[in-house]
Image (cartoon, rainbow over all chains, first blue to last red; front, top):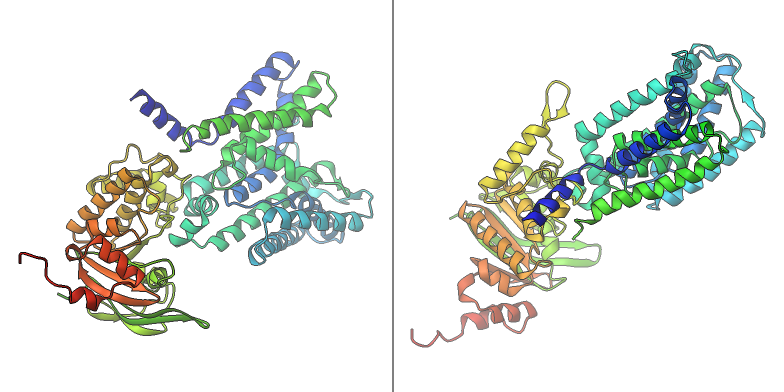
Amino acid sequence: MQGDARKHFLGRLRTYPEIGAVTMFLAVFGFFALLAPNFLSLSSLSGMLNLASVVGTVAIGATVLMVAGEFDLSVGATMGLAAMVFIQLSNAGLPPVVALGGTFVFASAVGLLNAVVVLRARISSFIATLGMMMVGRSLLVLWTGGSIVRLDEPGWMAALVAGRIHPSGLRMMALWFVVLIVVFHVVMTQRRFGNAVYAVGGKPSAARTMGIQVGRVKVVAFLITAWLAAFAGLMQLSRIGSINALTGEGFELQAIAAAVVGGALLTGGYGSVLGTLFGALVAGMVRNGLILMGFDSRLATGLIGLVLIVAVIINTSLRGEQTS
Amino acid sequence: MTPLLEVRNVARQFGHVQAIRRANLAVAAGQVVALLGDNGAGKSTLVKIIQGYHAPSSGTMWMDGQPIRFASPAEARDAGIETVPQDLGLVPLLSIYRNFFLGRELTRKPFGFLDHRRMRAICTRSLAHLGIQVRDPNEAVGNLSGGERQSIAIGRAEHFGARLVMLDEPTSALSVKQTRMVLDYIVEARARGLAILFITHNMAHAHAVADRITVMRQGRTVAEDLPGDEVTVEEMGRLVMGTLTVDQLAGRPPPAGI
């Protein structure tokens, strides 16, 4: 009987994928709160949120797509290219709204292209988008000529995307990130589409049997991923005012790491946007906290890697109990 | 009595491959019909035709005496034909109630948000009504036994208005105990008036619950509507393999003592 109760409890935990991410969040937060000077100051927390926002925005898309059972490794390149599209349209004198529209048209094309290559040619999205990543990155290198490309007039669009909203240094991007987390959390848990995404990634044949349009759901997931990557590119651009050939590089894997810390399974059908929020925050805290403690900031990636592994071990051991 | 579903002289070819040459089948409400046949006998293709996945190349199907032709699985489903496929149409990582309402989720006005509370309540109530006790509708389906999953898939079909449920090899991957559970459940569903087409190549399971037995072999119905209790498991096996014909079966001497 006690075994039954335990099995039952774990069975319910399985429907909460955020457990590992929340545990890691509390542990890492506690660690830096105790050991890193000024970690709890407003400016430090703001910096952390700003940092988490760009990766986190990309990671929301990565989460939705991973739940749908696919990957997108081209998001980093899409970030850079989308920002470049915005710069070119903007510097050509077009109004910011038109430049923004053009950027999202571009992102839609990228998302559709990814989806078509994966779904029509039936090749693994890991491979297909790896190829797209290399193509995209090399286009960006050629397009930027390898040098820094500036946005001539940042204007109100940049202020809207990444302007300072608080003396502590908190920026609009943090606000957007929170809004996007809420929106996509609701989409994934409270909408029929979200339910379909979980089913499509969890067991495509069953989803198809139950009348879900598997291909259509995946196409939308690819589109969402590309749109969010483009928006993250705009965040980066708006904050710095320029891009270069390396803008967005490495974000594809950081985004997947945040999604996985947040509970997403590489095999699809399982994951959580809220979990991804915690995953992105953990990464932001590690980067910020290490600097505050006086360590070389290049240590951060390594430490995030360890956090990733520990979080996945927690997630797996919780789930492993009931795979019978 | 008019059968709920009747299939006459249905054939289907894919290119040059003749998947079904001549299939006949009838199922009535409150009846379990076992569709027997070896791998490649055409059982699955016939099921897909009834389900609306494929159109028959020739032949006719009737439902309640009316000729039918389904353009899609959705049309067949609307007509009350549900299939429980081998993967059960269940997603292991999703909870019981999400699976129950998969593709048919209940939403609330005016924004169309999912009505989780109502779905949980209806799922629990409906399954309990059908004799399936679930501990917790939030539990992941992957956590359940094979027999429990099978019952939930059948219960779901029934809840959504199925009049004919086609079970594709429901017992093939189950333990003896789980098989017993599913067979009991089939008997209960029959008592509620459901028509059940039980596709299997396990003669003993067919023998245990089937009212009628139909056998397919090499794309043809070689025996139709045999009374389940008058054919032995061994005879079923021989019909499937083709070492016994219906004529031979009919011409056998009556059992001694009658």
